[in-house]
Amino acid sequence: MGYSAWRILREAIGGNKGWRAAWRDPDPQPEYDIIIIGGGGHGLATAHYLARDHGPLRIAVLEKGWIGGGSVGRNTTIIRSNYLLAENNPFYELSLKLWEGLEQDVNFNAMVSQRGVLNLNHTDAQRDAQRRRGNAMLLHGVDVELLDTRGVRAMYPWLNFDDGRFPIKGGLLQRRGGTVRHDAVAWGYARAADRRGVDIIQNCAVTGFRIENGAVRGVETTRGFIGARKVGVAVAGNTGRVMAQAGMRLPIESHVLQAFVSEALKPLIDGVITFGAGHFYISQSDKGGLVFGGDIDGYNSYAQRGNLPVVEDVAEGGMALMPAIGRARMVRMWGGVMDMSMDGSPIIDRTAVSGLYLNAGWCYGGFKATPASGYCFAHLLARDAPHPVAKAFRLDRFVRGAVIDEKGAGAQPNLH
Ligand SMILES: Cc1cc2nc3c(=O)[nH]c(=O)nc-3n(C[C@H](O)[C@H](O)[C@H](O)COP(=O)(O)OP(=O)(O)OC[C@H]3O[C@@H](n4cnc5c(N)ncnc54)[C@H](O)[C@@H]3O)c2cc1C
Image 1 (cartoon, helix red, strand yellow):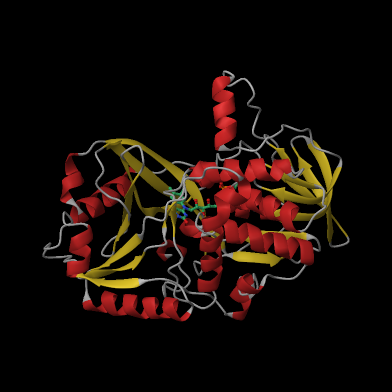
Image 2 (image 1 turned 90 degrees about the horizontal axis):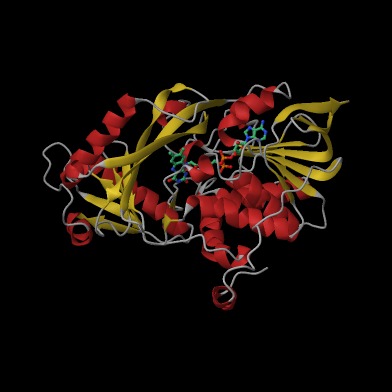
Protein backbone atom coordinates (compact mmCIF):
# COMPACT_ATOMS: atom_id res chain seq x y z
CA MET A 1 0.00 0.00 0.00
CA GLY A 2 1.71 3.20 -1.19
CA TYR A 3 1.10 6.50 0.57
CA SER A 4 -0.11 9.37 -1.62
CA ALA A 5 -2.44 12.37 -1.55
CA TRP A 6 -4.96 10.29 -3.51
CA ARG A 7 -4.78 7.53 -0.93
CA ILE A 8 -5.38 9.97 1.97
CA LEU A 9 -8.42 11.37 0.15
CA ARG A 10 -9.83 7.89 -0.53
CA GLU A 11 -9.34 6.83 3.09
CA ALA A 12 -10.91 10.06 4.39
CA ILE A 13 -14.01 9.42 2.29
CA GLY A 14 -14.11 5.75 3.34
CA GLY A 15 -13.77 6.44 7.08
CA ASN A 16 -10.07 5.53 7.26
CA LYS A 17 -10.85 1.82 7.37
CA GLY A 18 -8.36 0.76 4.70
CA TRP A 19 -5.06 1.54 6.47
CA ARG A 20 -2.98 -1.50 7.37
CA ALA A 21 -0.03 -1.90 9.74
CA ALA A 22 3.03 -0.18 8.29
CA TRP A 23 5.11 -3.36 8.56
CA ARG A 24 4.45 -7.02 9.30
CA ASP A 25 5.18 -8.76 12.59
CA PRO A 26 6.71 -12.03 11.34
CA ASP A 27 8.11 -14.92 13.36
CA PRO A 28 11.80 -15.55 12.74
CA GLN A 29 12.67 -18.04 9.98
CA PRO A 30 15.22 -20.78 10.82
CA GLU A 31 17.81 -19.20 8.51
CA TYR A 32 18.55 -16.02 6.54
CA ASP A 33 21.21 -14.92 4.07
CA ILE A 34 21.90 -11.82 6.15
CA ILE A 35 20.89 -10.89 9.69
CA ILE A 36 21.20 -7.30 10.88
CA ILE A 37 21.32 -6.93 14.66
CA GLY A 38 19.73 -3.65 15.80
CA GLY A 39 16.52 -2.04 14.57
CA GLY A 40 17.75 1.53 14.90
CA GLY A 41 18.24 3.91 12.02
CA HIS A 42 21.46 2.31 10.82
CA GLY A 43 20.21 -1.29 10.96
CA LEU A 44 16.94 -0.49 9.19
CA ALA A 45 18.66 1.65 6.55
CA THR A 46 21.10 -1.19 5.91
CA ALA A 47 18.22 -3.63 5.42
CA HIS A 48 16.46 -1.22 3.06
CA TYR A 49 19.49 -0.64 0.82
CA LEU A 50 20.41 -4.35 0.88
CA ALA A 51 16.92 -5.31 -0.30
CA ARG A 52 16.68 -2.44 -2.78
CA ASP A 53 20.12 -2.69 -4.39
CA HIS A 54 21.58 -6.12 -3.70
CA GLY A 55 18.67 -8.58 -3.67
CA PRO A 56 17.13 -11.01 -3.86
CA LEU A 57 18.32 -11.88 -0.36
CA ARG A 58 16.60 -13.34 2.70
CA ILE A 59 17.17 -10.57 5.27
CA ALA A 60 16.09 -10.13 8.88
CA VAL A 61 16.51 -7.22 11.31
CA LEU A 62 16.57 -8.37 14.94
CA GLU A 63 15.61 -5.71 17.48
CA LYS A 64 15.68 -6.36 21.21
CA GLY A 65 13.00 -3.74 21.93
CA TRP A 66 10.85 -1.82 19.50
CA ILE A 67 11.68 0.00 16.27
CA GLY A 68 12.74 3.55 17.07
CA GLY A 69 13.22 2.94 20.82
CA GLY A 70 16.98 3.56 20.69
CA SER A 71 18.92 6.68 19.80
CA VAL A 72 17.27 7.01 16.39
CA GLY A 73 14.15 8.15 18.26
CA ARG A 74 16.01 10.12 20.94
CA ASN A 75 18.29 12.49 19.07
CA THR A 76 18.04 16.22 18.40
CA THR A 77 17.41 15.54 14.67
CA ILE A 78 20.27 17.61 13.19
CA ILE A 79 21.71 16.72 9.79
CA ARG A 80 24.66 18.38 8.05
CA SER A 81 27.83 17.57 6.08
CA ASN A 82 30.19 20.30 7.33
CA TYR A 83 33.18 18.04 7.96
CA LEU A 84 36.83 18.99 7.55
CA LEU A 85 38.69 15.76 6.87
CA ALA A 86 38.83 14.06 3.48
CA GLU A 87 37.99 10.71 5.12
CA ASN A 88 34.73 12.12 6.50
CA ASN A 89 33.47 14.82 4.17
CA PRO A 90 32.46 12.74 1.10
CA PHE A 91 30.72 10.21 3.36
CA TYR A 92 28.58 12.83 5.13
CA GLU A 93 27.87 14.61 1.85
CA LEU A 94 26.61 11.31 0.39
CA SER A 95 24.39 11.08 3.45
CA LEU A 96 22.99 14.57 2.91
CA LYS A 97 22.26 13.74 -0.73
CA LEU A 98 20.46 10.57 0.35
CA TRP A 99 18.45 12.60 2.90
CA GLU A 100 17.40 14.91 0.06
CA GLY A 101 15.81 12.00 -1.81
CA LEU A 102 14.79 9.87 1.17
CA GLU A 103 11.09 10.59 1.34
CA GLN A 104 10.52 9.74 -2.30
CA ASP A 105 12.73 6.66 -1.99
CA VAL A 106 10.92 5.15 1.00
CA ASN A 107 7.49 6.73 0.32
CA PHE A 108 7.28 8.17 3.83
CA ASN A 109 7.06 11.72 5.19
CA ALA A 110 10.17 12.09 7.35
CA MET A 111 9.84 15.90 7.52
CA VAL A 112 13.26 16.47 5.98
CA SER A 113 13.75 20.20 6.50
CA GLN A 114 16.86 21.89 5.07
CA ARG A 115 16.53 24.93 7.30
CA GLY A 116 20.26 25.61 7.66
CA VAL A 117 22.84 24.83 10.35
CA LEU A 118 24.82 27.76 11.76
CA ASN A 119 27.95 27.11 13.86
CA LEU A 120 28.86 30.29 15.74
CA ASN A 121 32.41 31.45 16.40
CA HIS A 122 33.51 33.66 19.29
CA THR A 123 37.25 34.18 18.84
CA ASP A 124 39.61 34.96 15.98
CA ALA A 125 41.12 31.49 16.26
CA GLN A 126 37.70 29.88 15.95
CA ARG A 127 36.89 32.01 12.94
CA ASP A 128 40.16 30.94 11.27
CA ALA A 129 39.37 27.28 11.99
CA GLN A 130 35.91 27.72 10.47
CA ARG A 131 37.40 29.38 7.40
CA ARG A 132 39.69 26.36 7.00
CA ARG A 133 36.79 23.95 7.42
CA GLY A 134 34.69 25.93 4.97
CA ASN A 135 37.46 25.91 2.38
CA ALA A 136 37.85 22.14 2.77
CA MET A 137 34.11 21.78 2.21
CA LEU A 138 34.20 23.96 -0.90
CA LEU A 139 37.05 21.85 -2.27
CA HIS A 140 34.76 18.83 -1.87
CA GLY A 141 31.95 20.65 -3.68
CA VAL A 142 29.87 21.12 -0.53
CA ASP A 143 27.86 24.32 0.08
CA VAL A 144 28.98 26.62 2.91
CA GLU A 145 29.13 30.32 3.81
CA LEU A 146 31.27 32.14 6.36
CA LEU A 147 29.25 34.92 8.03
CA ASP A 148 30.57 37.91 9.96
CA THR A 149 28.75 39.38 12.98
CA ARG A 150 26.47 41.41 10.73
CA GLY A 151 25.47 38.33 8.76
CA VAL A 152 24.58 36.43 11.94
CA ARG A 153 22.75 39.43 13.38
CA ALA A 154 20.59 39.63 10.28
CA MET A 155 19.46 36.04 10.87
CA TYR A 156 19.11 35.98 14.66
CA PRO A 157 19.10 39.54 16.08
CA TRP A 158 18.13 38.34 19.55
CA LEU A 159 21.32 36.34 20.20
CA ASN A 160 23.64 37.65 22.92
CA PHE A 161 26.16 39.41 20.62
CA ASP A 162 27.81 41.64 23.16
CA ASP A 163 28.47 39.14 25.91
CA GLY A 164 31.85 40.24 27.33
CA ARG A 165 33.09 36.67 27.58
CA PHE A 166 31.66 35.08 24.43
CA PRO A 167 31.05 37.82 21.83
CA ILE A 168 29.65 36.42 18.58
CA LYS A 169 32.17 37.12 15.84
CA GLY A 170 30.47 35.21 13.03
CA GLY A 171 29.53 31.73 11.99
CA LEU A 172 29.80 28.96 9.45
CA LEU A 173 26.47 28.37 7.72
CA GLN A 174 25.49 25.30 5.76
CA ARG A 175 22.09 26.06 4.28
CA ARG A 176 21.52 22.48 3.10
CA GLY A 177 21.85 21.22 6.67
CA GLY A 178 18.78 21.07 8.86
CA THR A 179 16.56 18.65 10.70
CA VAL A 180 14.63 15.43 10.04
CA ARG A 181 11.91 13.94 12.21
CA HIS A 182 13.96 11.22 13.90
CA ASP A 183 11.49 8.40 14.60
CA ALA A 184 9.87 8.82 11.18
CA VAL A 185 13.25 7.82 9.75
CA ALA A 186 13.07 4.50 11.57
CA TRP A 187 9.44 3.98 10.53
CA GLY A 188 10.10 4.97 6.92
CA TYR A 189 13.05 2.66 6.48
CA ALA A 190 11.23 -0.15 8.34
CA ARG A 191 8.18 0.13 6.13
CA ALA A 192 10.21 0.31 2.92
CA ALA A 193 12.37 -2.69 3.91
CA ASP A 194 9.30 -4.68 4.94
CA ARG A 195 7.68 -4.01 1.58
CA ARG A 196 10.75 -5.57 -0.08
CA GLY A 197 10.40 -8.68 2.04
CA VAL A 198 12.74 -7.95 4.96
CA ASP A 199 11.59 -9.58 8.22
CA ILE A 200 11.66 -7.00 11.03
CA ILE A 201 11.55 -8.95 14.25
CA GLN A 202 10.99 -6.88 17.38
CA ASN A 203 11.36 -8.11 20.98
CA CYS A 204 14.17 -10.39 19.83
CA ALA A 205 17.44 -9.74 21.67
CA VAL A 206 20.63 -11.35 20.42
CA THR A 207 22.28 -13.14 23.32
CA GLY A 208 25.22 -14.82 21.59
CA PHE A 209 26.92 -15.75 18.31
CA ARG A 210 27.42 -19.25 16.95
CA ILE A 211 30.94 -19.22 15.53
CA GLU A 212 32.48 -22.41 14.04
CA ASN A 213 35.98 -22.64 12.56
CA GLY A 214 36.32 -18.86 12.62
CA ALA A 215 33.08 -18.25 10.70
CA VAL A 216 29.73 -17.05 11.95
CA ARG A 217 26.85 -19.52 11.52
CA GLY A 218 24.04 -17.55 13.18
CA VAL A 219 22.91 -15.93 16.39
CA GLU A 220 21.38 -17.09 19.65
CA THR A 221 18.38 -14.97 20.55
CA THR A 222 15.61 -14.75 23.13
CA ARG A 223 13.46 -16.38 20.43
CA GLY A 224 15.87 -19.24 19.74
CA PHE A 225 18.77 -19.84 17.36
CA ILE A 226 18.58 -18.19 13.93
CA GLY A 227 21.04 -19.27 11.24
CA ALA A 228 22.73 -16.82 8.85
CA ARG A 229 25.50 -16.73 6.25
CA LYS A 230 26.39 -13.19 7.28
CA VAL A 231 25.64 -11.09 10.36
CA GLY A 232 25.90 -7.28 10.51
CA VAL A 233 26.00 -5.63 13.94
CA ALA A 234 24.46 -2.13 14.09
CA VAL A 235 23.56 -1.68 17.74
CA ALA A 236 25.11 1.78 18.33
CA GLY A 237 25.38 2.38 22.10
CA ASN A 238 25.24 -1.35 22.84
CA THR A 239 28.15 -2.24 20.54
CA GLY A 240 30.56 -3.08 23.38
CA ARG A 241 28.10 -5.48 24.99
CA VAL A 242 27.05 -7.24 21.79
CA MET A 243 30.56 -7.62 20.35
CA ALA A 244 31.77 -8.99 23.70
CA GLN A 245 29.46 -11.94 22.93
CA ALA A 246 31.73 -12.63 19.94
CA GLY A 247 34.81 -12.32 22.16
CA MET A 248 35.85 -8.85 20.93
CA ARG A 249 36.93 -5.78 22.84
CA LEU A 250 36.62 -2.54 20.89
CA PRO A 251 38.06 0.98 21.08
CA ILE A 252 34.60 2.24 22.03
CA GLU A 253 33.09 3.60 25.26
CA SER A 254 29.37 4.04 25.86
CA HIS A 255 28.22 7.36 27.34
CA VAL A 256 24.83 8.99 27.86
CA LEU A 257 23.75 12.02 25.87
CA GLN A 258 20.68 13.97 26.95
CA ALA A 259 18.18 16.05 24.98
CA PHE A 260 15.68 18.66 26.17
CA VAL A 261 12.43 20.21 24.92
CA SER A 262 10.82 23.43 26.16
CA GLU A 263 7.16 24.33 26.21
CA ALA A 264 5.80 25.38 22.81
CA LEU A 265 6.67 28.95 21.85
CA LYS A 266 5.81 31.12 18.87
CA PRO A 267 8.21 30.70 15.92
CA LEU A 268 11.61 32.01 16.98
CA ILE A 269 14.39 29.88 15.47
CA ASP A 270 13.96 28.84 11.87
CA GLY A 271 17.26 26.96 11.63
CA VAL A 272 19.77 25.14 13.81
CA ILE A 273 22.25 27.16 15.91
CA THR A 274 25.30 25.82 17.71
CA PHE A 275 27.16 27.79 20.37
CA GLY A 276 30.92 27.80 19.79
CA ALA A 277 32.06 28.68 23.30
CA GLY A 278 30.39 25.81 25.11
CA HIS A 279 28.47 22.72 24.16
CA PHE A 280 24.96 23.81 23.26
CA TYR A 281 22.84 23.45 20.11
CA ILE A 282 19.24 24.41 19.52
CA SER A 283 16.44 24.32 16.98
CA GLN A 284 12.65 24.65 17.17
CA SER A 285 10.26 21.86 16.35
CA ASP A 286 7.24 22.39 14.14
CA LYS A 287 5.09 22.10 17.29
CA GLY A 288 6.96 25.08 18.76
CA GLY A 289 9.13 23.40 21.40
CA LEU A 290 12.76 24.45 21.57
CA VAL A 291 14.83 21.29 21.07
CA PHE A 292 18.31 21.50 22.53
CA GLY A 293 21.23 19.52 23.87
CA GLY A 294 24.83 19.71 24.98
CA ASP A 295 27.67 17.48 26.04
CA ILE A 296 27.71 13.80 26.99
CA ASP A 297 27.52 12.80 30.65
CA GLY A 298 31.12 12.23 31.63
CA TYR A 299 30.95 8.61 32.77
CA ASN A 300 30.44 5.29 31.01
CA SER A 301 26.92 3.88 31.05
CA TYR A 302 24.43 1.76 29.13
CA ALA A 303 21.45 3.43 30.82
CA GLN A 304 19.18 5.53 28.62
CA ARG A 305 18.93 8.33 31.17
CA GLY A 306 21.24 11.08 32.32
CA ASN A 307 22.15 13.15 35.35
CA LEU A 308 21.49 16.66 36.65
CA PRO A 309 24.99 18.26 36.36
CA VAL A 310 24.69 18.12 32.56
CA VAL A 311 21.25 19.73 32.73
CA GLU A 312 22.84 22.66 34.55
CA ASP A 313 25.73 22.81 32.08
CA VAL A 314 23.38 22.82 29.07
CA ALA A 315 21.13 25.46 30.65
CA GLU A 316 24.19 27.66 31.27
CA GLY A 317 25.25 27.33 27.62
CA GLY A 318 21.73 28.27 26.51
CA MET A 319 21.57 31.27 28.81
CA ALA A 320 24.96 32.55 27.65
CA LEU A 321 23.86 32.38 24.02
CA MET A 322 20.24 33.48 24.21
CA PRO A 323 19.18 34.85 27.61
CA ALA A 324 15.61 35.10 26.29
CA ILE A 325 15.07 31.37 26.90
CA GLY A 326 15.59 31.84 30.63
CA ARG A 327 11.83 32.22 31.04
CA ALA A 328 10.85 29.20 28.94
CA ARG A 329 9.89 26.10 30.88
CA MET A 330 11.56 22.81 30.11
CA VAL A 331 8.89 20.14 29.66
CA ARG A 332 10.80 17.02 28.67
CA MET A 333 14.27 15.52 28.80
CA TRP A 334 15.67 12.09 28.11
CA GLY A 335 18.93 10.27 27.45
CA GLY A 336 20.34 7.91 24.84
CA VAL A 337 23.47 5.76 24.77
CA MET A 338 26.34 6.82 22.50
CA ASP A 339 29.02 4.51 21.09
CA MET A 340 31.96 6.90 21.46
CA SER A 341 34.93 5.79 19.38
CA MET A 342 38.40 6.94 20.41
CA ASP A 343 38.86 9.29 17.46
CA GLY A 344 35.23 10.36 17.12
CA SER A 345 34.85 8.71 13.72
CA PRO A 346 32.84 5.60 12.82
CA ILE A 347 33.71 2.01 11.97
CA ILE A 348 32.14 0.20 8.99
CA ASP A 349 34.21 -2.92 8.53
CA ARG A 350 34.65 -6.67 8.52
CA THR A 351 35.82 -8.32 11.73
CA ALA A 352 38.29 -11.13 12.41
CA VAL A 353 35.35 -13.57 12.35
CA SER A 354 34.41 -14.51 8.78
CA GLY A 355 30.86 -13.36 7.97
CA LEU A 356 30.63 -10.99 10.96
CA TYR A 357 30.56 -7.26 10.11
CA LEU A 358 30.56 -4.17 12.30
CA ASN A 359 28.86 -0.78 12.00
CA ALA A 360 29.62 1.38 15.07
CA GLY A 361 31.42 4.31 16.65
CA TRP A 362 28.82 6.93 15.70
CA CYS A 363 29.29 9.02 18.82
CA TYR A 364 26.62 11.70 19.00
CA GLY A 365 26.65 12.45 15.29
CA GLY A 366 25.24 9.22 13.93
CA PHE A 367 21.75 10.37 13.05
CA LYS A 368 22.88 12.50 10.13
CA ALA A 369 24.95 9.53 8.95
CA THR A 370 22.00 7.12 8.89
CA PRO A 371 21.39 6.95 5.11
CA ALA A 372 25.07 6.76 4.09
CA SER A 373 25.86 4.34 6.89
CA GLY A 374 23.09 1.98 5.75
CA TYR A 375 24.06 2.42 2.11
CA CYS A 376 27.75 1.69 2.71
CA PHE A 377 27.15 -1.12 5.22
CA ALA A 378 24.80 -2.79 2.72
CA HIS A 379 27.53 -2.48 0.08
CA LEU A 380 30.08 -4.08 2.42
CA LEU A 381 27.76 -6.91 3.46
CA ALA A 382 26.71 -7.72 -0.10
CA ARG A 383 30.06 -7.34 -1.88
CA ASP A 384 32.59 -7.98 0.87
CA ALA A 385 34.38 -4.80 -0.17
CA PRO A 386 34.12 -1.34 1.42
CA HIS A 387 32.20 1.36 -0.39
CA PRO A 388 34.71 3.98 -1.67
CA VAL A 389 33.41 6.78 0.60
CA ALA A 390 33.62 4.60 3.71
CA LYS A 391 36.92 2.86 3.05
CA ALA A 392 38.77 4.79 5.78
CA PHE A 393 36.37 3.63 8.52
CA ARG A 394 38.41 0.53 9.30
CA LEU A 395 38.68 -1.10 12.68
CA ASP A 396 42.45 -1.63 12.40
CA ARG A 397 43.12 2.12 12.12
CA PHE A 398 43.42 2.18 15.91
CA VAL A 399 46.21 -0.42 15.73
CA ARG A 400 47.92 1.31 12.81
CA GLY A 401 47.64 4.75 14.39
CA ALA A 402 45.76 6.04 11.32
CA VAL A 403 43.02 7.65 13.37
CA ILE A 404 40.49 10.04 11.81
CA ASP A 405 40.69 12.80 14.38
CA GLU A 406 38.09 15.23 12.97
CA LYS A 407 38.05 17.41 16.09
CA GLY A 408 41.78 17.36 16.67
CA ALA A 409 41.07 16.27 20.22
CA GLY A 410 43.13 13.07 20.22
CA ALA A 411 42.11 9.72 21.61
CA GLN A 412 39.63 11.00 24.20
CA PRO A 413 36.03 9.89 23.74
CA ASN A 414 34.80 12.53 26.16
CA LEU A 415 36.05 15.26 23.83
CA HIS A 416 34.49 14.05 20.56
C1 LIG B 1 20.07 12.98 22.94
C2 LIG B 1 20.73 12.64 21.64
C3 LIG B 1 20.90 13.63 20.68
C4 LIG B 1 21.50 13.33 19.47
N1 LIG B 1 21.54 14.29 18.49
C5 LIG B 1 22.01 13.98 17.26
C6 LIG B 1 21.91 14.94 16.22
O1 LIG B 1 21.33 16.02 16.39
N2 LIG B 1 22.44 14.62 15.02
C7 LIG B 1 23.06 13.45 14.79
O2 LIG B 1 23.57 13.24 13.70
N3 LIG B 1 23.13 12.49 15.77
C8 LIG B 1 22.60 12.72 16.99
N4 LIG B 1 22.62 11.77 17.98
C9 LIG B 1 23.28 10.48 17.71
C10 LIG B 1 22.42 9.50 16.95
O3 LIG B 1 21.11 9.49 17.46
C11 LIG B 1 23.05 8.10 17.04
O4 LIG B 1 24.42 8.17 16.68
C12 LIG B 1 22.38 7.11 16.09
O5 LIG B 1 20.97 7.18 16.22
C13 LIG B 1 22.87 5.70 16.39
O6 LIG B 1 22.46 4.78 15.41
P1 LIG B 1 21.07 3.97 15.45
O7 LIG B 1 19.98 4.87 15.02
O8 LIG B 1 21.24 2.76 14.61
O9 LIG B 1 20.97 3.60 16.99
P2 LIG B 1 19.77 3.02 17.86
O10 LIG B 1 18.48 3.64 17.50
O11 LIG B 1 20.20 3.09 19.28
O12 LIG B 1 19.71 1.52 17.35
C14 LIG B 1 20.42 0.43 17.91
C15 LIG B 1 19.40 -0.63 18.23
O13 LIG B 1 20.06 -1.84 18.61
C16 LIG B 1 19.22 -2.48 19.51
N5 LIG B 1 19.98 -3.51 20.24
C17 LIG B 1 20.94 -3.33 21.17
N6 LIG B 1 21.38 -4.51 21.64
C18 LIG B 1 20.70 -5.46 20.96
C19 LIG B 1 20.70 -6.88 21.00
N7 LIG B 1 21.50 -7.56 21.85
N8 LIG B 1 19.87 -7.57 20.17
C20 LIG B 1 19.04 -6.89 19.31
N9 LIG B 1 18.98 -5.54 19.26
C21 LIG B 1 19.81 -4.84 20.06
C22 LIG B 1 18.72 -1.37 20.41
O14 LIG B 1 17.56 -1.73 21.11
C23 LIG B 1 18.51 -0.24 19.40
O15 LIG B 1 17.16 -0.16 18.97
C24 LIG B 1 22.00 12.02 19.21
C25 LIG B 1 21.82 11.03 20.16
C26 LIG B 1 21.16 11.33 21.36
C27 LIG B 1 20.91 10.24 22.37
